[in-house]
Length: 191
Ligand SMILES: CC(C)(COP(=O)(O)OP(=O)(O)OC[C@H]1O[C@@H](n2cnc3c(N)ncnc32)[C@H](O)[C@@H]1OP(=O)(O)O)[C@@H](O)C(=O)NCCC(=O)NCCS
Image (cartoon, rainbow, N blue to C red; front, top):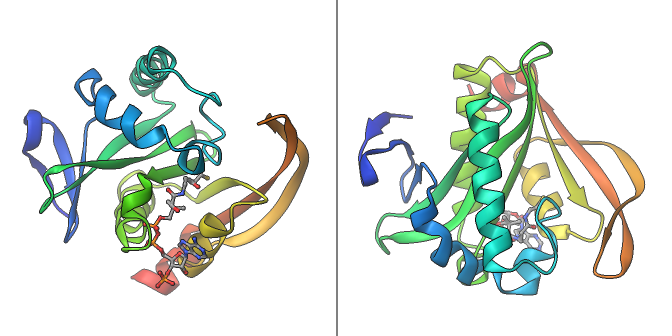
């Protein structure tokens, strides 16, 4: 992984096909277009459902404040050959006393199943475990979100538990599954 200054003069993480760039309000239109698809928005239980452009703008600003206070670190996923943003990825709930953080990610539907989430997640796992010294990274996934479950399992995450009927979304209570990966497990698989 390389840290470098590039697009929009923001610090980025570089993968083979993707750059993780600092999000800004300049990305609002692109992100909103990608999130308009309910298949993309519904599993993103950190965002309102439905989500207007104003609400998304508010969430971006809220996220910036959380970054300033050290609770979050997030990026837009930028595809280098397409030269545009295809989704986002980030840590939230960063707990610097216990060295844990939650990870979340989404991509526009036209970019699914091309390995972009795997590449971006691997960059974030390296950032989290190697540079931020996290001991555990976890993800909270709707129990209907098979894509995320398979993705996390392939990267070595284990299912740790379930919060029953934790999220009310689209007129239904959803169970939330928690998947976790420990630093020692990451080291065994990736280093
Ligand atoms: C979950 C998500 C980020 C996966 O992104 P992606 O770039 O398509 O994932 P990858 O291409 O890296 O897939 C890696 C592996 O995950 C699994 N996977 C991905 N999508 C899958 C699906 N729809 N069904 C079953 N397995 C799936 C597969 O094992 C896949 O490997 P393969 O394509 O070689 O079989 C994407 O589907 C998405 O944005 N979904 C909507 C938002 C969301 O759910 N965000 C997570 C909230 S917690």
